[in-house]
Length: 624
Image 1: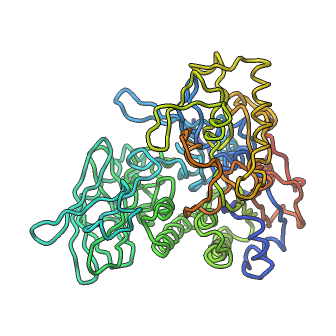
Image 2 (image 1 turned 90 degrees about the horizontal axis):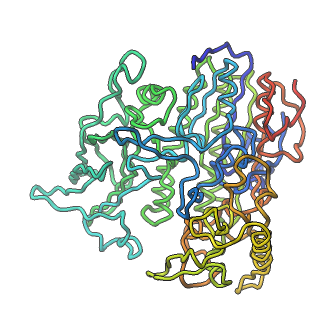
Image 3 (image 1 turned 90 degrees about the vertical axis):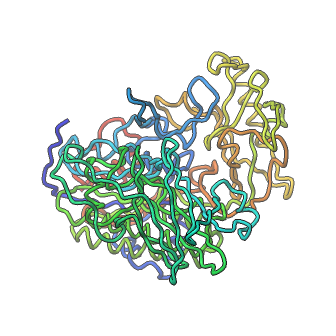
C-alpha cells in the first residue's frame, strides 16, 4: 500500500495515562497537586470513562483505538482458550513460523485502529508503546509496539539475579529460577551467563572496582543494513547507552545504561542494577529486550523508526514492560531500586514522545505511560506517598507534552481503567472442583491435572468460565442447547451464593451469559459465563492460566506485593478510567456516561473526520 501524507490542518495529542483512577485523580486535583491536569479540567471537559470487560490494558486500549467493544475487535483477554482445545493461548496475537523456522506474528485484532483510519485518509499518526499494538502495523507516520511485545526469548520478560553468595539472599528469593550463582575466576573476577534465543549463551564477566563493578559483555550488534532500513545507512549508535566496546561500569546502588548484547540469532539490550553490599556481589539484570538499533521482530513501523530513535536518543527498552514490575513483585528488587529504574525508563519514553511532537508531519500522537498503573499495583495503599508522587510526575509530563505539541493542538488525557484494592484472592477452579463441576487427578504439589472427560466447566483468563461443550471441545461432555443453558444458570446461581469464609460477605457481584455484553463476530470465542467480583477481590493467577489447585482455600488473603488491580474480573464501572480534554473543538463541562469506545469517534471528529460505519462508540460532543 502506498502511503500518501497530507499536511495536518488539525492536531490531536492523546496522552495514554494507563491506570489513572478517578477517585485518586479527583482527590489530588482538589488538593491542588496537579496544576497541568487541573488546567485541562478547567478549560475543557472531564469525566469518568466506563471501560471494557475484562478491564485489562490490551483489551481496553484496543477498544479505545478502534471504537469497538472486544466482541467486535477480537482482542478478548491476555489469555484465551486455544480453539478446539483446552490449552491457554496468548490473546493478543498468534505466533506462526515461516519456511526458515522464524516466528511470524499475526495480531488477533480484526477492527481498524484510529491510525489505520487516518492513514487511509492521508493523515499521519504516531502510536508510542500502546498496549496490544504488537506486531507493529503499516501506517502513515510511526509506531512503537507496546505491551505484548516479546523479549529476546519470546516471553514477556525473563530477568536474572546474579549472586556470588546466594545464601545471603532472602529464603523466598534464593530458590527462584532467576537466581544464578556467579563463579569465581582465578584473576579475582566473576563469571555469569546470559541466556539468549535458541538456547544460545553468552559470557558475563564481572570485576570489582573502587566505585562498584565493571562488566564485560558480548559486543554490541551491527545496525540494520541499508536494504533492511529502506534509508541511507546511519552510523552505529553513539553516546549514552550505546554499548561502547562491550564494557560498562556501575556504581553501587545505581542502574547502568542500556547495553547491547549480540547473539547469533538476534541482538538484544539489557541493563543492570548493582546492590550496595561490601561483602558479597549481587547484580540484577533486566530481561533481554530486542535492540531498537537492530530489531529482529516487527516492534516498529516503519522498520527504521526504532533504529532512528535509538540513534538520536540512545537505546531504550522495547519489550512489554519498560519497568521491572515483575522483579519487584517477586522480591528480586527492593522498592528504591525499582522506582529509580522505572522512572528512568518512563523518562526515556517521554523523550521519545517529545522528539515525535517536535516534527511537523503528524495529525495524531498517542504516547502511553504505565506510571500510575504500575505504582498502584505495587504500592497500594500508599496513595498519599508513592502513588501521589507518580501522579505529580504524570502531571508534569502532561505539561511538557502539551508544550511540545503547541497551543493549537487539542489534548486528551485518557486512562483505560482505574484500580481497586485486592485484599483477597479467589480460586474459581478450586470452587468449581468443590462444587462438582471440575475434576482433577495426578496431583503434584498443589496443582492437579484436569480430567476433561469428567469436567463440565473451567476458568481460564480474566474473562470468566468456559463450559466443556460436546462437539466444541475435544472431550466435551455438556450437551448444547437446553442442558448448556441450564448449566450456565446453575453455576451462576451458585456463584452468587459464594461467601467469604472470613467475613461472610458475598464475593461475586454478577455472573452473566457472554451474550449480555456486546455483539460481534468474536462472541463465540468468549468464555460462556462472565463473572465479576466485588471490590477487594481478585482472581488468583493460577486460575487465569487455567490451572487447577488441588487444595487450599477458595478465598484466601493476599500476602504478596501485588496489592491493587483492575483485571478482576470486575464490572467496567467499578474500575472506570478518566478523560480530560481541552483545546480547539473541545467544549467546557462535565462528561456523563462516557465510555472508552467513545474516544475514537470523538478523536476523528476533532480532526475533522467522520467516523466510519461499524464503530460501537459515539461522539462525546458535537463536531466543531
